[in-house]
Length: 50
Image (cartoon, rainbow, N blue to C red; front, side):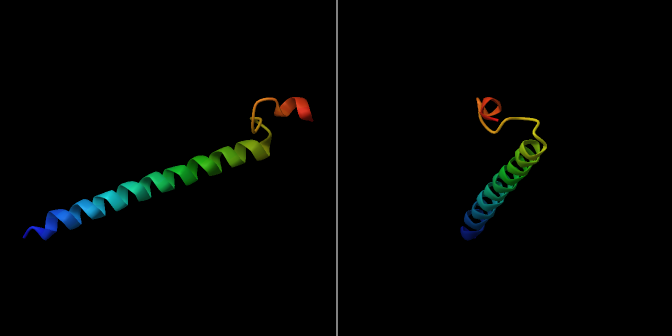
């Protein structure tokens, strides 16, 4: 049964990448809410441009 470890490794790699992808989306949504609430400037110097 040499195939099983290969597929297990593939599924683990996919799940790890999916978790990273979901974490990235969560962070992006978090910062998007912060920007829309005006709590944090999108980039340094933004507050001087108002």
